[in-house]
Amino acid sequence: MIFSKNKKEERQGDGQDSVPVPAQEPGLGAAPAPAVAAPVAKVAEPAVSEVFSKDMSGTRLLGLIFQVCESMGVSDVQIRSNLPVYIETNHGMECLDHLGALDTDQVYEIYRELLGNRESASHGFGEDPAASSGHAKIDAAVEVFKETHVDDFSCNGIHVEATGKTSGRLRVQVHLSSNGLGVTCRILNDSIPRIQVLGIDPDTEQMLCNAVQRRAGLCLVTGPTGSGKSTTLAAIIDWLRQNFSKHIVTVEDPVEYQYPTDMDALDGSGKKVMAPSIVTQQEVGRDLASYRQGLKDVLRKAPHVILLGEIRDREAMETCMEAAQTGHLVLSTLHTTGAVKTMGRILEMYPKENHGAVLNRLSEILIFIHSQGLLSGHDGRVLTYEFLQNNTDASASSIVAYEKGARSLEDVIKQSGNIAWDDKLTQLYEEGRISNETFENARMHREDTEYV
Image (cartoon, rainbow, N blue to C red; front, top):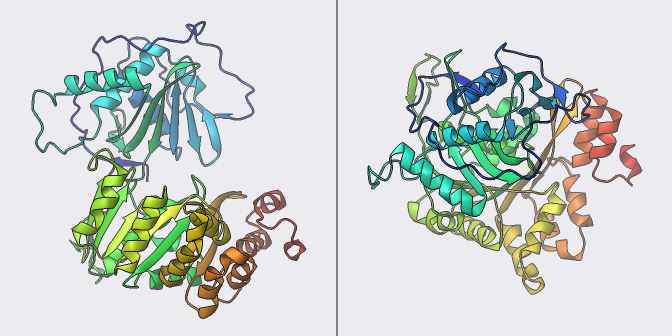
């Protein structure tokens, strides 16, 4: 759910200070007319009668944008100088040109308002009250931006005065481009979906739940950006924390889902009770100075389960494998599609002479690879996936032999209990949930006539 009823968060700045704004690119002082016939974006239907005006504060500008977004299932908001606001919905990019265009000064006011709403890096612990005042922190951040030309941070949700609702938390990037100052806001979810509603088949869902009950091992959820990896992991962790007594530690950049400490009572009484697990969530930049620090410190917190938001490099991969080999259940993600490409991506992190040893370790600790993607279906987005579980001698042997050829691993994926990518696509196509064009574009083995 994007929006929820909440009292307005106390703001640390009103966005009205007069500080020099970053210089615009030459010739971009006037707002160009919106591209009415732009093929990349639909024009969103007006949801409010008000439009942007020069006298609006950053608070009011953001409130107006998010008031329009409230009922549209928006995941991303793109704000650029001298352009209308664009939003990403389930239907693709949509243009809010009925609100008008924002000039550089207005985008700068929005930036300052977001900085005032920024989540504290230390939660107030050990801060100098004078240095941590709203205006001082905003001014300091602006000075850093003038040097780096980029600013990444998380902030609390935007309160919409007109409706009394507050958006989900935001992941914000501020940058410069040919238009001048720009802001991208990713709206983070404030509710965790149940694993049963993700679109995963019941048999695969059961195998996922059984797998994460293991005491130790490595579980990988893979897919491109925007494929729902974080949502799938959050649903798995949420199920685990409600059903088992564990200490779960996460290292994320950013924290997309926040796990509550309580849960619905299992007796159906509707009461809230404390969950049997405790979840320690850490966000890079807020709770950790760096991703590397989080990797270094995670094992010192005595976890049973570790969630690393992303395996970015060899160091992260080594941390995952070391933790799995020393008795921890580890869950993480890679930006790959399919089990075969996932194995290849892991080997790319190591010199060739180490490949044999890495494959041997993976054959012992890997529990599953769940690779997924989101497709445009006839009735909205549709989840497709490939699932490989390493629970037989054949699967372990195919991992060890991967460097000699991927065919044995591909054969194992087609065995009972696993789901091949193209088999799942065929199922979706035969059920009438995706078009033939979507099916053809998403196939992994386009030369294979078995799926035609």
